[in-house]
Length: 341
Ligand SMILES: NC(=O)c1ccc[n+]([C@@H]2O[C@H](COP(=O)([O-])OP(=O)(O)OC[C@H]3O[C@@H](n4cnc5c(N)ncnc54)[C@H](O)[C@@H]3O)[C@@H](O)[C@H]2O)c1
Image 1 (cartoon, rainbow, N blue to C red):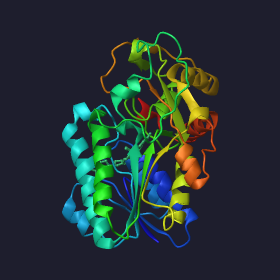
Image 2 (image 1 turned 90 degrees about the vertical axis):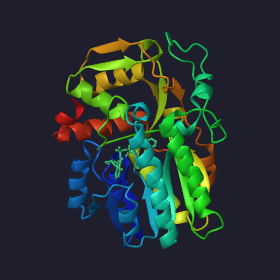
Image 3 (image 1 turned 90 degrees about the horizontal axis):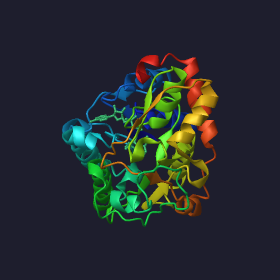
Image 4 (image 1 turned 45 degrees about the horizontal axis):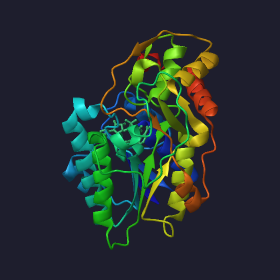
């Protein structure tokens, strides 16, 4: 099987590339990544050690994508994934996340290949997610009793990032309509694990562990600045496992949109994450309270995994402590200080 992983030097793409090469017999895995994300150059070296080639091509370059060799499957992990980039760099978000998908889909059509698309929980409407919480100035820990399934509202604003993901999903359905090619759309919640070069606006879990480990500062940003906002976290190994299962079953189980995340057993507030990082690293650091809330931020998200469980009999295996421990082990065994300054 010939697999193209776009964004193959990113956090998800690089872990997936190495995992699939080991787990699928005779798999040929190629990465495509222009290394725009800081840290991707480290993952490119990692791929090289595993004998996986990366082509430094911009996914928005239609001609170069069209000229690539033939593949059976594309796993699209390429994106500008930071929500705040929707404001700071909207052209880049649009070009990479939407024009990029368009180019990849033209290539799929040419090759008659299948696609597994990494979509996001951020396709859901910001206002509807906010309505789940009564008092948005989160002075106290949240009472948790809701999970979000695939039927949650997507009609209203969700950030430009969310729009490009939802529009990409629609585009996939257009291209694959009445064709033999198969697609799977995975709307992931927060993914975390080793080889993730987290920033304050994307990849906060490794950032939290690293800033504790390296004794640097952090901020609770938004919703009163107390760190009570909540997300569920899925371990990258679980992401790799469900995608492998999807590849194995794609002939029979396909053309689906699924919510996938850490779920009800694996959610945390930032405040709770701090406590866990203090225990893990033995360090306590200063965390600033910044009350300003970005209009794109959401106070709460926990995945409802019912559909993915019903479809594949799959649920996440790793708990949050295992995810944090694995990130910590990665940090103490490699020289990553400069990436978490
Ligand atoms: N990490 C998460 O928590 C999470 C959650 C839900 C969905 N996703 C989605 O999963 C996918 C992978 O996310 P990630 O966390 O690995 O992000 P990442 O930033 O680590 O990886 C994306 C990779 O794409 C590359 N890239 C960006 N623009 C490019 C372009 N124009 N041409 C070629 N390469 C380009 C970057 O260099 C980077 O290596 C993304 O589509 C993201 O939206 C991620």
